[in-house]
Length: 74
Image 1 (cartoon, one colour):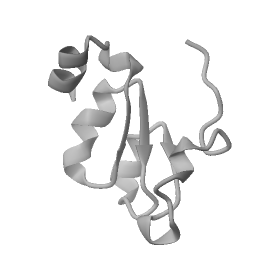
Image 2 (cartoon, one colour):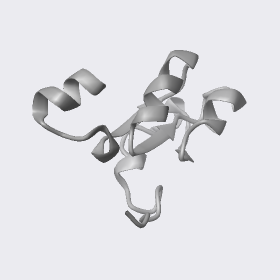
Image 3 (cartoon, rainbow, N blue to C red):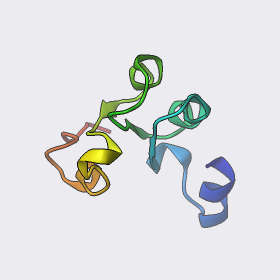
């Protein structure tokens, strides 16, 4: 994620990421907004800013909905 953000000239703190596995936790720690999928383990979900529904519950578009993630102050 850092390399992709650098490629586009974006600070990682301005990037949102979505994940559900242990390998996503390092990305959660770098991103400005991290969202765990509902099927994520408790350990993974605890590292994210927010948790959304599972991917089996049509969760794909839900993180893009403002009701999923309330606005945060910069």
